Length: 313
Image 1: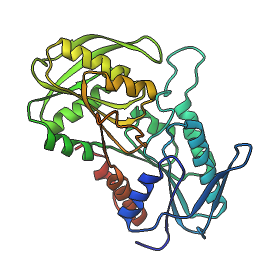
Image 2: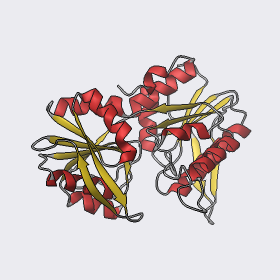
Image 3: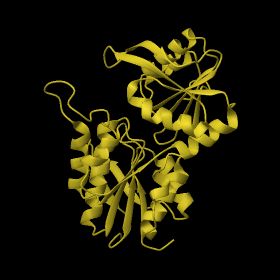
Image 4: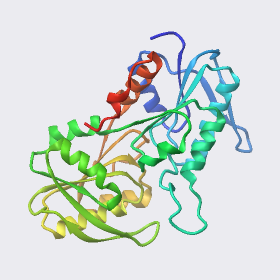
C-alpha cells in the first residue's frame, strides 16, 4: 500500500477497524481518544498525518451521541493536522430513521448529522445499508453507499435450501427484501405493519404463500426486535416452516435480546458493522463486513472504481 494511507478508529467498534486494517495490510493508526474528568472528549493523533489520506472508522451506534461526537472531533483534529483528505467510514449511520418530517414539529436529524459531518471537515463518506437511500442526498460531498449482501447472500445460499421465501416485515423494507429474493431465486412475501409506539408494533396482514416454506425476514436494522417478531408470528400463523431473520445492523437492547430468545425466530443473521455483545444463547450469527469496507477503502485510496461494490448482487 502507498505510505500515505492512514486508517484510524474511534471507540465504537475497534475490532472491526482492526480487521479492516489487516485486510489492507497496514497497521491501525495511533489515535488517542480519551475523556477529561468532566466527560469531554479529547483526541490526539500520535503520528504525522500531514498530506495523508485519512480514513476514520466509527459506527454511530449506542451510545450514539458519544460515538458521533468522537467521530466529529476526530475529523476536526485530522483537518487541523493538515490531512489531504478525510473519509468518514460509518458502517452504521445513526439517526438514519429520522429522515423526514412525518409529524408536526419534529426534526430531520439524519440531515443534521450530515451537516455536522461535513462542517467538521469530512471530504467523503462511506456507509453501509442506510435506513433510506435518500440520506445520500443530504450530503454535498461524495457518499459511497455499500451493501452487506455480498457477505450475507453467500452464507444463505450455503446454509439454506432453495425453497426459500424472503419476507419484508413492513413496506419500508420491500425493496431490500425483493433484492434478496432475486439474488436467492426465492419466493417473496410482505407483512403489513402498524407501529403503535417506539417500542411496539402490530402486524396485520400477510401477502404471499409461505405454508411449509422456510422464511427469511429481511430488514436493515433492529433494536427492540418488535417488527421481526411480529412478522415471525404472522408467518407462523400462515403455516410457515422455520423462520429466520437477516438484518444488516443488530442494535438489540436488553429487552430486544430477551424478545429474540423467546421468539419463534430460529436464528438472527447479522454483521459486525456494530459490535454484537450477546449472541442470545447462540441465536445470533455474526458475519464480517471488513472485506467489503476494506476493499472500498483500498479502491478509493488508489483512485479505482468502486461502482461494482454498490451493486446488490
